[in-house]
Length: 474
Ligand code: HEC
Ligand code: HEC
View 1 (cartoon, rainbow, N blue to C red):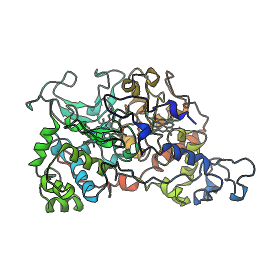
View 2: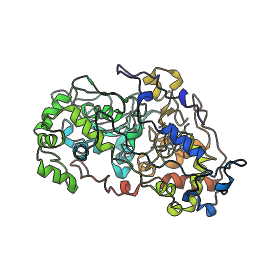
View 3: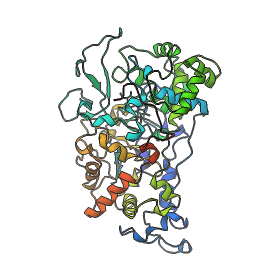
């Protein structure tokens, strides 16, 4: 077990935002989830353990319920853990069906960008595990955090826009000239992201949300999704020209035809639009009055994102008692994940993250300081947020980790980093230790991570992960 409070703790003050974050949030279920992992083995008597006879991974039988409390408890790594938790909505932004649907429309709305070319959904696609399938393309290999192309910190980011000035004219970028700019890091998943107290690889989107137009704190805690969504539409790399503002977005949407550029729009979305054919009409339907404001846009987007819950993976069915939901190799892989390979120390089920920051030794930490640049603490050098592993097999083709290349290029290369206990050893987490696995066990671990954690609805982009085709999508 890692020492929970020493890493990514609530003392990491963020720029000028009231409230120090983690401690006050209602979202953090990670610790209780972890306790459940280790503690429920003996007496739970779940179907999850019933099918372990043919795992082949060396996992022994769990102790019988009648043994509980007498003698040592041997873990099998297949103990039942907490199921996928209920969503948590901030007090200031409660759920409604209509708001989530408006948020879905806005998430896929390319007119949110200054030149109608980029939606949130351009870079975050369910079929790619909530990340960007284009990251694997050569045009997505960007300059990385240091802004120099062709050196060691280059990363497989997301393609944004050609730089443009405040009058909307193309403007040569110092790095990319008149080519499309690329984000310095890979896009993490927008699915299951509701669970995090702080968002982005370095956690710079905080739990309290400040309205970007009024400057007022609109959500005290639990608003990391709203905080995060305020950034991309006015980013001069991702979506809009230099100097673009939220007030410009408000005015633009007030007269835009919703999803004008999209096609194959799912019925629920197109029905809402035909009944309320403008954004003011949609906003009146959701909020009672027609004003299109930044706060309302962001509240709706975040409400939609809180529905992106991939809770129907084979692992979820297995954990609920269907022992055949995982194949024998996947079950053996899961046991290794929890025991010998100790992945669950940080990738704590059921969300497969501990909501904290660690340096796993996959990249030289001076290339991307990660959390340390936000906290100002050198003890955080190279630490990144523990990615949730749901749907990671769908993200793999675009590259993994925050940089997506080299040791992050494939799932196999990432697991190789763990197997050898990290490649770089500067400030690497003490829980990253070389592990003794047979080659066959390594394949079982890989098989579990690749296929055991994929929600088939995300893979096939079925509800709630359905979406229209974007105008810019080729
Ligand atoms: C040009 C591509 C691009 C667009 C457009 C874009 N994103 Fe992202 N998104 C990224 C990248 C890259 C990151 C990670 C940046 C980092 O950590 O430094 C990210 C991070 C995130 C995260 C954090 C996930 C986590 O686990 O930390 C969420 C949530 C998210 N984006 C949602 C959105 C929403 C909502 C929009 C639209 C308002 C949007 N994105 C638009 C590329 C994009
Ligand atoms: C000390 C904590 C820790 C341990 C132990 C750990 N991980 Fe991770 N994992 C992380 C962090 C932090 C990241 C993000 C790192 C980055 O991007 O640089 C990550 C990222 C990943 C990713 C990439 C996810 C994505 O969406 O890009 C995979 C796959 C992964 N881990 C699998 C595993 C497996 C399998 C094990 C066990 C062999 C394991 N991890 C053990 C902390 C940990």
